[in-house]
Image 1: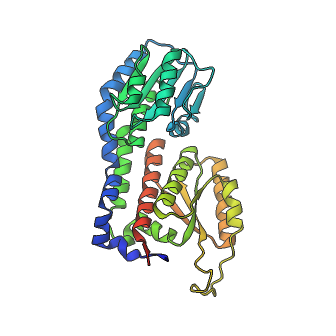
Image 2 (image 1 turned 30 degrees about the vertical axis):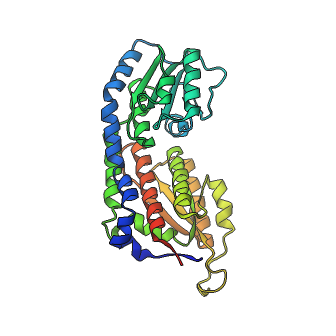
Image 3 (image 1 turned 120 degrees about the vertical axis):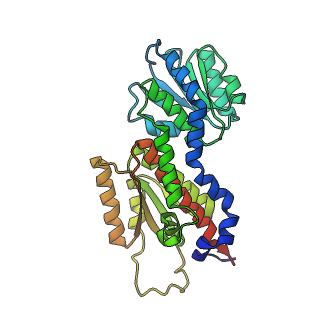
Length: 343
């Protein structure tokens, strides 16, 4: 059975209607951030006030499987040692001088519950963003524990709640939930299924990736995190290969690409094999090392005739830029799923 990409489906009302639930879920991303931030505002304020009389923790430990997002945000900024610990336990040295933070939107992850219970047993200060009454919330019960309530099961919205708390206790960067929500709303408007593909960046990107092997690169720590998530979305929606990595990991793939020949027969045997396309997630960073890596990638792509696509954002904060790039790439992945048909 052959699979091909029908770009006309991207503007077809019937096809778009069949994908309405998935696209509506993406469009509501900003609303979920606002809802979580509003619902948790009083709990965050109480937690910040309670921390005012305490000394700064020796270290911050982000536990649980969603700890990598916090690491991407906090590692360049946190004024105390920071470690992400995605397993079901804690580092052996963690104790009463340390702060353990956990994101668990669903509240049903047994590994997160185990890490939270261990943190409570050791007397750590514990802050958990999860559903009230969930398994993780129940394991968090303790004298030094705080539960920041969540309701939407949205990882990014839950992370914004936690980052708002960490901002309040001067352990994280300035976080404005409304800025993040506005950035998501802007992407939802630009990538709306009701916008024609000629002026819709996500639909245009889906077309560019239709017959390609996406190589997704983000230079900053957060852009690199977004690149990995976008590659995951492309693999999930299309069942095709999509790679995300540092420049040194992607350069060999680009350099090994066969030179494009304008005289190639597109219908010849083997011509349908996907060529790599470099997708750059540009969050506006001006760090010299990042700019140098980007230059190397672009020069290699030009030398091998590899197509380059770029996602950009003008959101005002690091977290908002991450959210914007991630949602743009996720929209493109959904339109890729929509356009792929089987014969």
